[in-house]
Figure 1 (cartoon, rainbow, N blue to C red):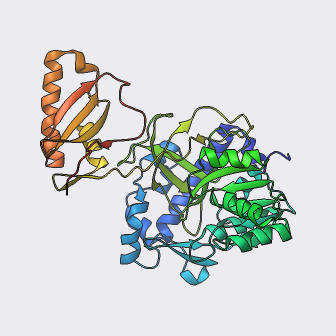
Figure 2 (figure 1 turned 60 degrees about the vertical axis):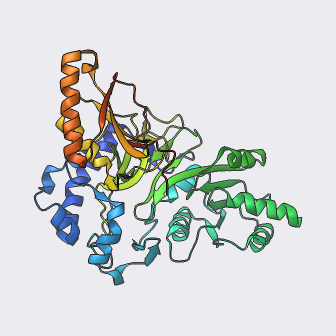
Length: 418
């Protein structure tokens, strides 16, 4: 079992789904009974009836973008927490501001599994370059490292010369931090004539892991892997030695939905990542992250059997201002709901004669029929105007024509003026 954190990583999909489905009724009932926000949101929901992904997908989503207002109106956590603030281990403040909580317990952010997949083992010394000031990333990976049996240098951010000196003197085997900061430390060590060769493994997140940075580490023989998580949810998915997508963490239920909705999309289609975590203290249910991704088919070649995500593919919030009015992805979804003949749509915002324009590009099988196609186009134009309060044109394309990039609204304007 040295290649895996535990047996849960290699169990069958049926076993995993059975365990998660069995946990859902209790988690929904707990959230509804203990968290005021979920008591209101799920008022009409019978927790005992939520026993599958399909049942879960019928529940409303809670958007990360709503947390600022929720926490402002019901401090400190918007009514989403089930325990009083004094019962927590730590409380954080992220930009926004959004306040996050850390419960007591072993590995509360679930990062140990990701660190293990990156090559960290008990007895390693880990150089942790995530911030320890107000934001949770430093603690997120320190608690995971401790759960693995690793010692931690709480290095934090900045102070590059001191970081290089610490690495040379203490000789940590691993690094945790943003993707490019290890490169900065290693280059500073080279400049100062210091030996930083003790670092052989790394785990990065919090920014793009660009190909040139990855190549830099590979040239030095350092195996560096990445993960995806948020300050609210903790770790969600992580890279493995297969380097084919990010494997979803075992205590997480991940869904991919059409942006602006809570409706799941077919596997492989790009959409917004929605996550449910089985946390008793902060039971986030169908938490919409605002990030785009897609499911990779099949199981990872590394042997782990959980769902894989392609990684971060952009932002789902494509709200755009047209003629002084905001147009939202949810409005495009509403148009599709009213016209099932339109299989998929993309609202393209352009500019012509110093005026904003809108073209609703729709995939439909009726495009080839002149009579039914024109009738559908006229109906879509009316719905577009009714939903957005703006006029636009409709263009039909064949099924499968629109890009699979998660974009519902495309802002194609090149000159927005003053």
